[in-house]
Image 1: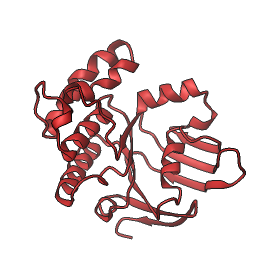
Image 2 (image 1 turned 60 degrees about the horizontal axis):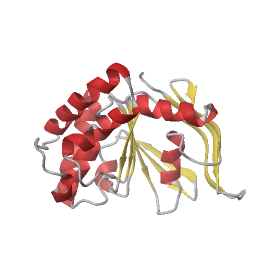
Image 3 (image 1 turned 135 degrees about the vertical axis):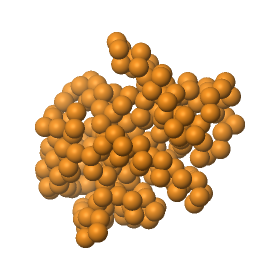
Length: 228
């Protein structure tokens, strides 16, 4: 899958309300591009990211990944698409403290079957190695914030997804650790020609993107391509 993203008439409404949290009339993104989403808190950035993953409630319109409208799918089919094609990275890591780095990174194997399930542990281990996380039985409870986020990145990449969605991936990290993480993450993403969309308040993240969109009050206020 080399997914091209095409959005049309996307609206996400508040729960039990007609208030529109996000409205994107028309947007497309080429396969393999890295897109940054920025804007003030509460502007709709994370809502946008969740809509792209098929996780936003009360969403309407069309969000097409490689021609497949994720909003038109059943909840089960959306979940299957995420398992096959989308890796997600969150600000809060969402790791199991009592498990090792390898066990955490290989967790996606619990939700797939067949050959894919067999491939995930080895791929997770390789991703950890490339991200500088050593092997061993030490649990992530003793890991630093930077180490934890690297484990979360390895977990997101363990299924070889074509799409990476990241929500404030550097927010919990100090400047030096954040810069190193962004360098390594983008190296892995660009090497594999994955599509990445990252919500962030971090200017250093946006400086590395191919394109940056500003979201204000639930709408796209600016759309800037690198070197434009």
